[in-house]
Amino acid sequence: MSQERTIHVSNGWQMLTINLLLLIGGVAATILVNALAANASPGFAVLLLVTIPAAVTGAILAGGHFTLQPNEARVLILFGEYRGTVRESGFYWTNPFMTKTTISLRVRNMETARLKVNDKRGNPIEIAAVVVWRVDNTAEALFDVDKYEDYVKIQSETAVRHLANSYAYDHGEEGEVTLRSGVDEVSEALRRELQDRLQKAGVVVDEARLTHLAYAQEIAGAMLRRQQAEAIIAARQTIVHGAVSMVQMALTELAEKQVVELDNDRKAAMVSNLLVVLCAETEVIPVVNTGTLYT
Image 1 (cartoon, rainbow, N blue to C red):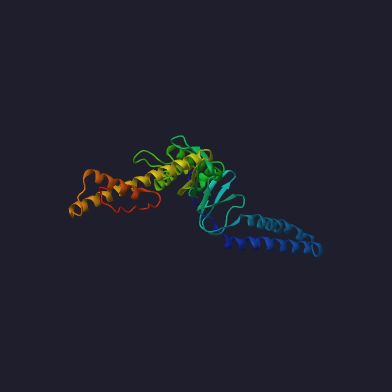
Image 2 (cartoon, rainbow, N blue to C red; image 1 turned 90 degrees about the vertical axis):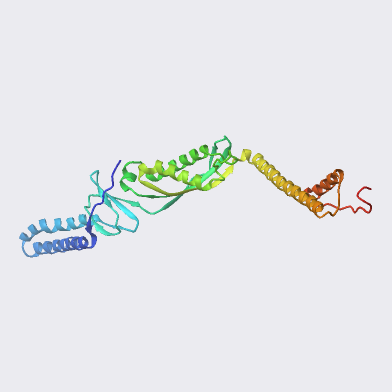
């Protein structure tokens, strides 16, 4: 693995002054010497061997200037050899023959495409995630992988696929983490896997979270009906539990306060009537008994 090392380069403003003096002074001196050699003495032409190289040197050295904005790094390579990385923002000068490659150190967002995969139970689902990442080691990002941005994209999609295969969409076993119920656990597991995959590219993953999760279209209708049925069953269970509690409370209150004495048949009739009233989906129309309980 490549190791990043910091390199110190010259101040750009100081070298800019020297370069301008060489370039402008060399050009001016060349024009002056050429005029003197033509009008006064041909011997002045020998000075062109000094003035012309000075101007050319100033022009070449001007190619060594570069600027860095905050959260940017410049990787310097001299004839194929990695010389170091400049991380501090500012105006600098270095050897003009160095290859200077800029890498952004800013935090980036990358959203994966909606992938169609099978979950742990084999159900086809659609899943997508957003990954927050940044370059930490410029040498590894530039030299250890080919096109680190594409590497991050491909590895992120691979990690999301593996995540979907490792968890059930929902309705897991008791205590089992699922993609729907364990949002925080699933997100942390995705971040850890991405960090392991992208570490060789010098990338740090700050956050990873699912942005889209749904059943595939071919089973979405059936799963929706199952969810509706489960919701109805759960609601019915709650209603029945509450109704039974209310009937029990009513019978207990009647017996303790000795409001009326009911035999088992009348208790059964009362329980039946109360359950119908409490559990009915539509409004119940009462029937007033004008006789006695036994008529």
